[in-house]
Length: 407
Image (cartoon, rainbow, N blue to C red):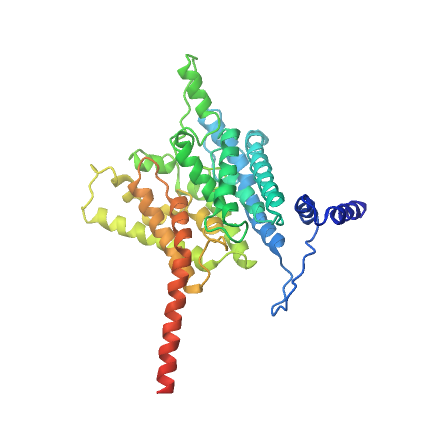
């Protein structure tokens, strides 16, 4: 109670001054926002932006914790110190050693993501004189989950600064941006530092450093960190079972590997009415449709094994959902209420095109066989256009109905 009273006194003291947004943001972060609607409202609800963001974070926490265990597991497995597990509940996976490796490597990513991102938000709030909103709470958690475990912290910091400024602040802040800030950060990293965002080594902790040591003349064994998508693209043999792919016992970005936990998180967001089930389902339908088309092309003999596209084209259509980040993108990225389509019909179109194009980019870009973030960013740009034509179609339909009634 004393802390709250002291913060309230500070807030009143600095009200109307330059640093007011910073104190207001700290008060809002610790306690329930005390802002109320000033005009007449027609719908009353107990939720607010802070509660909405916290709900999404709760859906992401299992992926974060699992990612910490998986980072250690993939590290020790690549070194040959542990053998493949026998499932999601295997004792060789849920060990303290695995967790600590992931914890000490992923925690700094979370700290840098939140620290740098919120610092930029505070600076812009003070300069522009607007309140700091809770929009970055989810972005700050998403960023560590969509990057490799060993990405340099300075690199992540630069990307976060770019993503928050270009992806959000230049448009006016939370609720005004047209691009998903987390994916803007991911896109910046991919195009600015491609060697740290693709290839076989970046997804397994220690693999890059070990290769650098070998190149320097040290007598060490190299670590193989090849992802399933990379193996399919190169038409290599796959060493992971379908269940490994589903449970998440595979290399990849920190939070994208466990499809089981992503589905659980998606159901939680649907149950709490935070995430759009239409977008999630239509994204999956779009991905399966494109996968079926590619399978038909291969079955018809149009694409043969000599083609560089054969590997990913021949993947069973349903397997595309469990070998990359399409499900993570569908649940946590495509459903962003600010950058997604707003109309119900628009959500179906928007999600379907994301899934459809994700698999298309994945297949036709063997050097970097993943296209979910590019597809979502592209559809972020076209979401307002989709909604515009959906609304116009409804207007025309109603006008036609009105003419029939008055005739």
